[in-house]
Image (cartoon, rainbow, N blue to C red; front, side, top):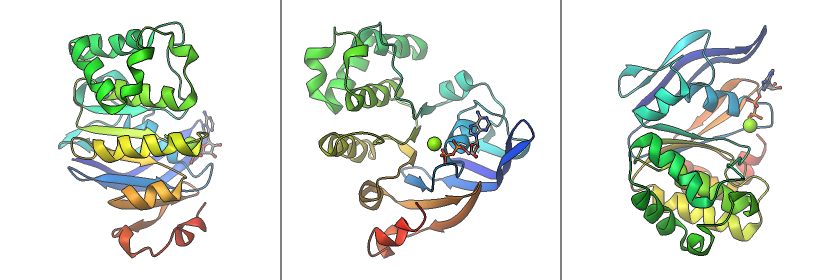
Amino acid sequence: MLEVNSIDVSYGHAKVLHDVSIRLNQGEMVFIVGRNGAGKTTLLRTIAGFMTPTGGDITFEGQPIAGMAAEKVARRGVRFVAQDKKVFSDLTVKGNLELAAHASGEPLERATERLLKIYPQFEKFLDNKAGGLSGGQREILLIGRALVGEPQCLLIDEPTEGLAAIVIEDIFRILNEMKEKVSGIIVEQNLSVVARLADRIYIMKEGKIEREVVNPAEISDAAELECYL
Ligand SMILES: Nc1ncnc2c1ncn2[C@@H]1O[C@H](COP(=O)(O)OP(=O)(O)O)[C@@H](O)[C@H]1O
Ligand SMILES: [Mg+2]
């Protein structure tokens, strides 16, 4: 469904992605792991339309999307959840959803229902300002917001970063349930989450794909991946 073919990406004169190729098949949840600075975020941001590759191409459902504006990529059904867990703090939880509902033409009620389905605990926070949410709740709200309008593909950058173990399990459960309905490329450093969810894994190093793990079950323990982190 999504193909990244030999892309190069630079910040000014500094080239940070070199000849990167990855693919996402329908129904897959694919993970990207690698050290800080490896280029994981740059790769997701490029797919999402926030950066234009200087070489190579990206196709979604057979159509070229490289260099397309981020809003347009999102409307096509590829949604990006950034690493920074930034919500609209002054808006309520519902208000945050409403923006996405408005943009996608989905009724707010349906968007709210979906959010409560993935995380029933939000019921009592719906009218609270999003600025008061914990890091984990923000991430869940952002995932709920990305799911508005039922996109085909999610790109999620480090969903469990900085979260307590108990919330990481909530995020794990949400991603696991999501697998039924949406395909995804997820950048993740928590190898227990990766090992339990990944259909395939790409290991990035210094702006390149170092290795593709086609059958994560063959990785006997997380230690084998750890050397890349
Ligand atoms: N806005 C930016 N301007 C210049 N260089 C950047 C910028 N963002 C990231 N970089 C550089 O690009 C490389 C890849 O960064 P990034 O994609 O954030 O890696 P990761 O997400 O794997 O930690 C790093 O060397 C980083 O310093
Ligand atoms: Mg990053």
